[in-house]
Each structure stands twice: as C-alpha cells, then as structure tokens.
Length: 391
Image 1 (cartoon, rainbow, N blue to C red):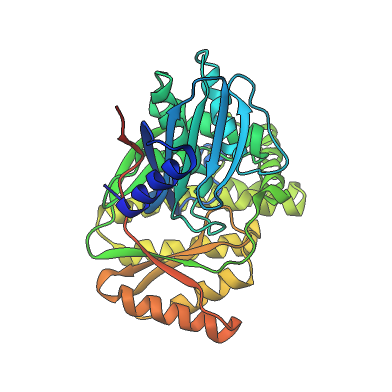
Image 2: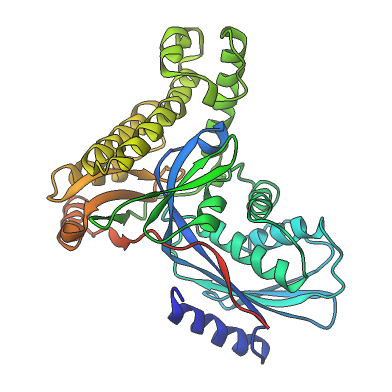
C-alpha cells in the first residue's frame, strides 16, 4: 500500500473522532502535469502522472441522516444532511466532498448519513491537485458505501462537477483522470476530446522533481476562469474564420493561429496561442518518449514554460526563477510550471542518478534569491486511486 503511515494515521484519527474504526477507506493520489498546460478544457492532449502522495478518505455509515465530515489535518468537523448538500462559505474544504455527494445522489437515494474523515500528505497550494485527490477518494469511498455503480470516467466527471458547482472553479478533467488512471513508472496520456487514456513509459533513468515555491496558488480568484473564457472566445473566432469545423482550440493549428490571430483582441490571441502550441508539444513529446529521447522531451518541457510566460501569463517570478536555475543544474533535462499556474510548483525532469544533487541545487538557488529554500519532492509516477479497506 502506498503511504501506509498516512493510512494508519487516518484510521487512528477516525477512531479518535467517532469512537470506532472506519468501514471503508479509499485512497487517491495527487497529480503532476508534465506537458499539456490548460489543454484539457480545450479538448486537447496531456501527459501527466499520478504521484506518490495522496489523500485517504475513511467512512462508516451513520444511523440517522446526518453526515459528519472531519478534516484530519485540522481535526475540525462539519455536519450536513445526506439528502441536501449545499455549498458553504465557511469551512470551504467541505465543498469538495459535498459536491461529490451531490453528484452521487443523482444515481440513487441514500437512507442514512455517514461519519467520515480525510487525511493526506499532498502539500496544499503546490499545484499537485490535492482537491482532485480529495474528490476522487471521496467518490470511491461513498460509491462503495452506498453501492453506487460508476465507471472511472463517471467518477472523474462527478469530481469535476464538484469543482464547478461547489468550489467555483471551472476545471477540466485532467486532475481527476490523472488520479484515477495513474500507473507506476508511467505517464498518463489523455486525449480530452475522446477521453481515451493510455500510458507512456518515462523510463527508469529519469524521475521528476516537484519544486514547491509556496508562491500564491488560488485559482478561485478568477484568473483560471478568465483564461478559460478567453480560450472559448478564441475558439468562437476561429469557428467563424476557418473553413473546417472548430468546436474547441484543439481544432486550430499553429499555422492557422499565425495566419489569423491579428484579427483577435491581443490578449485573447495570446491566450489562444498557448493551448494551441501545447497540443503540438504534447504530440511531439509523446513521439520522443516512444523513442526513449529524454533529452528531446526535456527541451519540449522548457518550450512549454516559455509559452506560459509569453502567451498565457500564468507563471510568476518565483516559478520563472526555478526554471532558469534548472537550466544550469547538472542532470536536469527539462522544467516547466505545473498545474493552473499563478504560483505553486515547477516540475523538473532529471536523471535519476542526479536527483539528490539536483534537488539540493534547486533549493539552494531559490534560497539565494528569496531567503529560504523551496520544498523539493522526488516524484515517482505511481498507481492511481483505489479502495484500500472494505468489509
């Protein structure tokens, strides 16, 4: 079992809160986006990985209709009725779980409530999608508790709707799919038009470093939603200009962007350039991995970050500093921001033999600039979500 110490701590905290053991425990990992930034909601391509940090959701049935939900890190409880979950403005961490419950309620009626606790080891605000790990672990556990049949893609959509309707973030399906479909030693290769999921081997010669800058990372402040709206506006523009069908920016090539972008508002043109270019970079990156060309794949990662800086403007000074430092560190093959951006983390591709030294150099370089080191985690692509305890 991954993260057994966290599992045991979650079970102990559950018993401390509720005086009994959980009946069901589900686990879901966080994710790292390797290439394919903001392409998921543009029906594009992404290479990602489930990581070796995640969240456990422990639950047992209650006798009445009241649900008790505890955040294991805070040891703070919220209560609500099982048949009527509604978004809350305080203790907003509960919205992710209640949003999942609302999605599952569309598939059945629940006669009883539950006692639940979640606990994990994904650094918050790091761009590793602790929210999706919470949603998917909640979905797996509650679906099993209430005997709801749902395939993985349905669970991913339930998690996505929890973000949309309860958390106020119009995310795509990248985070949830990555958490569900992770495989040890592999990248998750997803086509977000067909929702076909495959896997690409990273190889034993390389690992990923996650450099958490602790810079601000708060998508609900409107930055994410504004960029999504800009992409939708650009897709509508190209739909009217191009001779072939355009349902999303996935249908627009870089050559077509270059030919027509002058007719767009400058900001919207730049926003569109990023996912259009990213789709081509993901396709190229997959080809390079298939050939075992890690150096070439790393160069594509650097190009992806440059696009975030120039076109999407979802980077920040701290992230840019880490990427520039990485260029000069021995063993580093590529680096770019990961996740929504606006802070959070940088993902670095590095030779496995050089990982420890590279991590130290990156932390030291950050400390020299900002007075304290960034947190550096060694990430191994890992297995996806699962039930880890059941009757």
